[in-house]
Amino acid sequence: MTPAYHDSRKRKPETILEAERLLLCRDDRADSIWETLPYDSIAASPLLSGAYGSKLLRAGRLAEAGALLASAIKGLAALQLQAPLLAAMADCALLRLKTGELTEAGTLLRFLADHYERGDDGESGAVPHALAKGALLHGDPQRLDGYVAAAFERYAACRDLASYGELLLDLWTGLVVPEQLHRWEPYASRAEQMMRLQPGPAAADYPAYLLAAEQFQGGNWQEAAARLAALATAPFGSYYAHLARIWHAHAAIRAGRACPSEEWRELERAIAAHAADLELQCRWQLACHARHCFAAIPDASAADDALRRVRTLVSWLPLPPLIRSCAEAERDRQPIAAPPAPERQADSTTAGDDDTEAAGWSVRCFGRLSFERGDCRIGPIPWKRKKTRELLVYLLLQPHYEAPRERIAEALFGDVPFETIAGPLYAAVHQLRRIGRDRLGTDQAVAMKEGMIRLDETIVGYLDVEHYTTLWRVGEQLWHARDRDLAAELFEQAVPLYGELAPEIADADWLHAVREMLQERQATMLQRLVRHASDCGAIEAADAHLAEWLRLRPLQEEAHQAQIARLAGAGRREEAQAWFRKWEQLCEQELAALPLAETRRLAFGAPS
Image 1 (cartoon, rainbow, N blue to C red):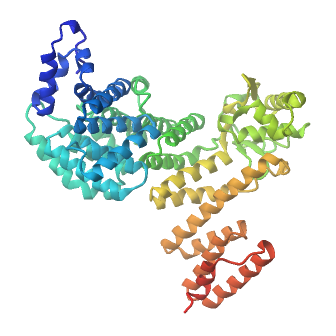
Image 2: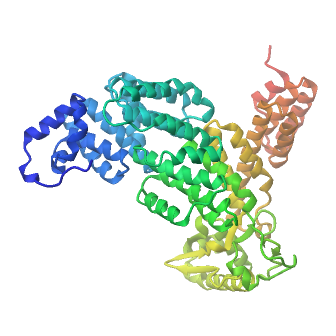
């Protein structure tokens, strides 16, 4: 498939013209032109650049594909060749989605959608295929279905089995939720018919891949591992070939079979060669998490590192299937969040030498600041300087537990010249380092380098605020992706973690905004749990969540509206009206305002 790089000076224009003719006529011989056509001949033709860029995209050579597609788009636009131009733009959009360049992808997708809606986007199935991936990203299932159906029809019309099959694989590996796959089974049957009619070498066995994906998504690990193993040498595109290998290793691990070290390292090297493909990297880190989480001797620290990388990748590429997989990994994480340590007295106040090799500490900031590891709990720490404790909490709440020293100084000491508070700040860092050595068993608890102050990440095996935030963020993404059951499950895990944040430093000005943000998230989760429980008919759960919501936010009108609506909906109209009057009085006393008209309507009904 790699084009020839020799004899470029002898290339003839008619060679390019013949290659372009084969492409435009969809001649079956077009697939063989890349083996003999010099690379500079390809680069000299926008049409060939677009076609070969598309081929490189499916081969996983994203950097080369991106350069050729960008060149093709410019050249095809100048030549006003609209159909191949839009096809190249669709491939470029798919590439940008893979690499997490969502702004660039969004620009391309909006342009493609405009032409698609007008019906002048040509016959390429790549256009609706790319739009379907964009609809997945933006949570638009109705448009997604229409785009997918159109892409199937276009791929079938031009007998493009490879693209047709990859769209099937997209569906079965996450483009739609598993419960909706039955609607697309007729298209899978059509693929089998296309394969039987395909001339030449045997095509990739797409139906076999679909069956393997169903077993993997359903958690049937033994069956999934067996089916995925059979796909190891099948001629799928790069992404799906590597995904089959990742899923095979993942399924085998979940089935209780350890992956041999050399085989794992070889797979690791293969995946590392595709570092730009964020979706593939996310799938790989999920497999790494499973390897450490479900090992005979679980490695909590390594599992957390893998899960942290998954969260980062999902934040860059928030596709619903990746969000769901991250949520499932969060659930798997629970049993190993605080791994057992050598038995010791519960009132231990220092970490022994053998602790230095153990997993990180379980750190809690909701409620009083505490450090635990197995049966070892750090007792009261003698904070000689109040700012030392405040520095520790501040770093724990930052991404990667680090921040610029000037920002830290401003938060802890106020808006004063850095030179005037440099001494107290360095003193706080020094004491924190000593506490790390004496109490946490590490000589490098905190470091200062290149203007940054950072906490040693290996100290923290689990941080309650971090875990709470992850559950909230992934749950919100799932909620907006309309996977409400799994979102509610994550919210149920997050809500009990909440409490007063670091009450020991309650007067720290910078902490007020953080507390307000966390309280807003807690209220939002409770609101969603009330709605979900009500929709599921879980009346007691809805009432419990609503009571907690009202306790947390007694002046939030939406909470009172929900309470009034529940009373009125249960036929307890008088109680609903009594609640409204109580809320009306509270509004007058605390807010110097009146309830919204909508709240009154919920209590008394629409005026006649």
